[in-house]
Length: 358
Image 1: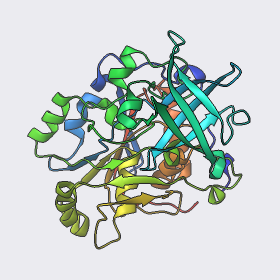
Image 2: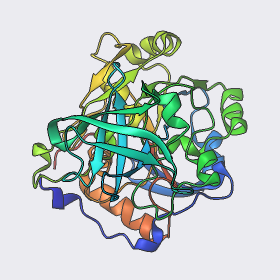
Image 3: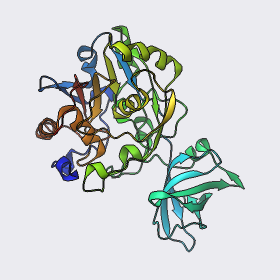
């Protein structure tokens, strides 16, 4: 299939620049993949819409302050986005301008507010796809993620026009995030949940079973190939806690309780980890869910609205069929739903075993 098959028109004013006042105050488009019906509700209505005994699977990864502003030798500006730690003190990173930040060069990490130097940025080598192996060094010591958190900025997506501020510090993390992880983008469906909403869902018999996908390029990297089959997903790591794994195994084997993934990252984690018999507790994945793929794990999916021609809209098209997916998004545009990370959400019911070949 062509990348252009997954294009749709999206007015720029529907791209949410800021979150709604309350996490659970976003609108919710409820889509039944089997019946092909649409209903307009709100996020705080979820306890009325999700089966009372559902297993809810969110991604509890922590978003890191992975965006670094640089001053190059000679005074020019630059930027870096740290993607993951290699375990030896170095990081995989995207840098720009790539032509000026080459192997062997050193730049300074600087404060945008004061212009002061915060750390040295050492580029060790060039990796595949133009990425770099780098070290962030202060007083001769390599900084780890916790130290980078203290000098970097939250990496808001490029379609959000402002730098991360105090509101983003609260709202571009889920309310239930773990203290660990190395996500460089938020698992956005989880941003809608308050402790009170989670408690309401628990009170009606739902279980809350987090997994962790360290969100990176595999989730947000744009497709550039003309054919989606030629797009190569970037590798992302996942972890599934023992408690989540033991609770999910009997459900995955006989589906006697409904399973709801909170976000595409949780869905991709389960689909990658489940082999039909067992569930890998940790690993890495390049899974690309596209039309022709039928889900094996989740029955239902809560997700935000995604970019045109993105791997995530391709995923939605795999669950709904491309024609219906476009019709759903056209309705969302017509009804002025807010799109992307800080936008509204969609609950896809009966997603499992509805894969379409188009």
